[in-house]
Length: 419
Ligand code: GLU
Figure 1 (cartoon, rainbow, N blue to C red):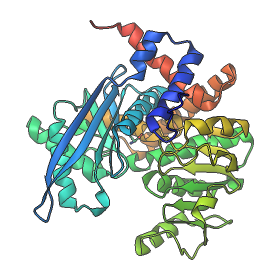
Figure 2 (cartoon, protein in one colour):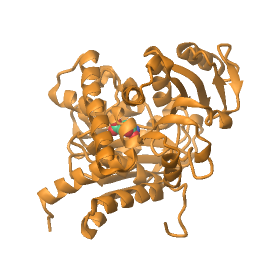
Figure 3 (spheres, rainbow, N blue to C red):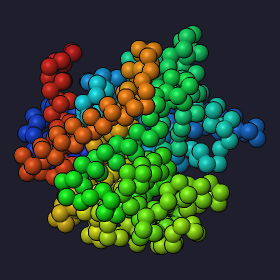
């Protein structure tokens, strides 16, 4: 690593993993340069009139890392700490993620520096519509298909779809995924990332010979990914013993009632003081002994200074980039079985792919069909990654990157270079 290496810059984490996999694959120098850099980056400054009449300018990004295997695909994040480097890293992770699960997309990501928690719906709508209008020549069902991510929702996708459609003079549902079901969204999309986490966790438990009913799970994050993962895991009989949020953590050794915890949060605004569990320290909760740890909140929660404290047998990375590259060797030395983000949380984009297919066909599937096909893809992808890791004697993360890089490089080689 260069001495200026910043462990907490997600782009450096993405590049460190990329370099490791590229070297293991013996990828030639030129191809490394192509795959390492994003294909296109757009920076826009978005004027928005706030409700109080004041004019504010927000900065937004859209990065298309690769369109080699299909349209760029990936979410849009609204958060105060969005950076271009973060969006670049997230865009490249989308390319690898789509390649790991073999869906015909490249990778992209968007972000706007704003704090949605202090903005009204009207302000968010104006921001979203103007951001979409600025991207009108960039996004589209054949070119770049956004989806929700941190700070954005089904509603955000509905605004994007409507704005895009107004410009095109006809309804174009396939321009975004993660829409409300009534507007061309897919059954099962909201649960998809959490369901994907459950599917790969069950596979990992099977490998360890742990009965799901015996499995103790710690989940960090109670947003869409962590919330759904916790709910579906407890429905499947696993014991979600601890839930960690930004403002506290709750623990119940017999397993938390996730629906009741959700209702408590809705009523009080927080998971703390839940009567079905006891409050525990949120930092220490990450280090509890457990079978499965699901970091499903933000980047960089497992890093070089705390990786040695993790006492989980399995880590299922629900978030993008929850582990820094410098933490990887420690987790490996401890023998922790990591299901890397680009596999573990790929259920979301997989059902996004189903949504895009349904929109383009104008023919919609039952939730059962969506879930069956999701399970097939996640199970096959888990098997591919784990078999590859065993065959090449590398950890699961390196195996997932190697598989993905190889697939994208193969496509680029076959297509040849346009010059
Ligand atoms: N934001 C999600 C992710 O990081 C979903 C992306 C998508 O469905 O396009 O995987």
